[in-house]
Length: 201
Image 1 (tube, rainbow, N blue to C red):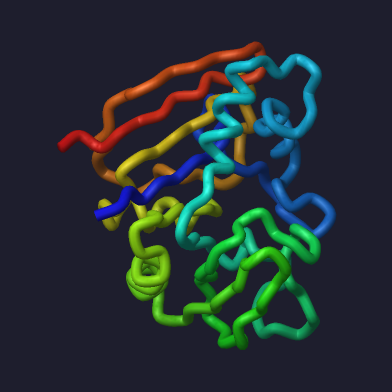
Image 2 (cartoon, rainbow, N blue to C red):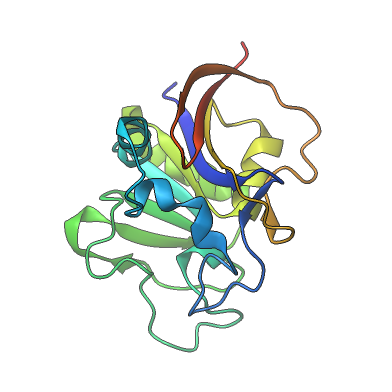
């Protein structure tokens, strides 16, 4: 079966987003500090470029939470098609977890957002079916990654550990009782330590 992957930037104290996420601050307060390695910090190195290749490699389908898709909470009361403009970077089906039904949204470049109201297992199953031999990526945010880790479906987990303490925000490991991975590759730069973990078989 093709790999299921997940790639997240994380602070030293375990947060993948800062507090008070909003339309104007989608990564939360200071959350951007976790992402300098791939969003233009001049200190980025070849190691960061390599890790960015891991992050952006094509996958057959994606699963993400509604909070990652956009800032709207509750019923869909406005026209919203994601943070990424007319051509999102996925170029594949994306299954968005939500409690509120929504028709699929087709975007340029082959991305279609499908909205799943039956929970993580249903979204993951649909993604696996859509992905075929090309694998699934758990794209975030924190709650969706937690659910994937608890479900035991992640084969490769990459963490970009930034030398930052956020103090509060969104965690991915709360409620995850075991870590069944071992490091397969480690790269570093002044901005982050990239650790690619593989599931222990």
